[in-house]
Structure formats: structure tokens, C-alpha cells
Length: 230
Image (cartoon, rainbow, N blue to C red):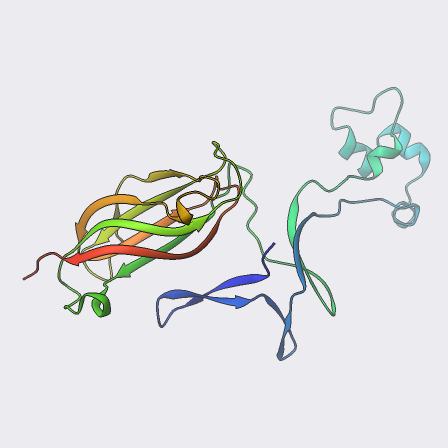
């Protein structure tokens, strides 16, 4: 897994790649390894039960906090089992390893459905490339992503590309219908052409990699020209 992170630059309105690091004191410490792992569950020790005065008889009768937690409808005939006093971890978290310890990264746990993995950029004016004022209309014919995937073509190895346009730099863009791209195994010299023929003022694009199995992207060529303005 890559040990790089995306850092948002509010002044330039874009992302910048940097080596993943952890703040310790006044310094940034490099991350050696990043990996998903299970969050530890809970375990009750005899010391814990002794602090609240719980006896084995209480566990068997279901009148203690642990028994009530394990059997909300009432204890079964067999009483509390040892497995009721511990629970294996079920949620996963991203663990970061550096020379000073193991750390967990901040994350948002979404149990309602599939997590979304995407890259988005808005308010692209292409002033430097087109040598024209930014408020003019631009016409995009095609997009050529320089990418390659070593996995075979399949339902779970795709990504979606969406183009949109904004009328100004403040309002959010209006996106078109997404285009699904199936990733071929090392074909077309890493080029996957996306036909668009779309026109607007300030371009935005979104790359959704939620269903991408494996991908390596180095650059994107855009076939764009000045359209018209006023």
C-alpha cells in the first residue's frame, strides 16, 4: 500500500502529494507502513469483576451488568458463558507504523453501504493552456488518462469519470452523467480515451474509484479548445 497522502491546499484550490507522516511534538515523523487491521474488542478480567463486587453466582443468575448485557431477554438455563466476557474486534481501521510506535488514523465509519473513493477537482479555467481569459467558454473533445491495470477486465475493476461545468468560481458545478470505464490488462499502451464533446466555462471532473480493483495513473491529457465568449 502506498505511503503517500493527499494534502488540500486552500490557497491554490488543489491537492498535493506528500509522504505520509505523524505529528509528534513539533516534528513530522515519516510513516514506514500503512495497513488496515481489526480494532481490538473488549475483554472482562477477574480484576474488573472484583472491583464491582460481581461473583460467579451473579454471572449465572444474570443479575450483573455482564449477564444483562449478554442476555437482555433473561439468562438461559446454562447461565453465563466465558465467551460472554469478551468480544472479538469487528471494525477495521487504518494503522500507521513509524519508528516511535503504532498509530491509528482518523476515519469515518460508514456501515450504511459501500464507501466512496474518489478524486475531484473544480473551477478549472485552463487560462495558461489556452492563452485566453478564464470567463470564456471551453470545449472538451476527449480525455486521455495515462493509466494501467494489471488485473483482468471485470465488474469489480472499473471506474467512473464525470465532467461538469460551473458558471462562476463560487457556485458548485453541474455534473453530466458519469461514464464507466472498464480497465483492460496492460492494453492500449496505458491509454483509455473518453469521448466527451462538452462545453462550458469552468470545468470540473470527478474520478470515482469505488469499484476499482487496481490502477496506476501517471497523467491525463485533455483535448480542449477555446469555444466562444463575450
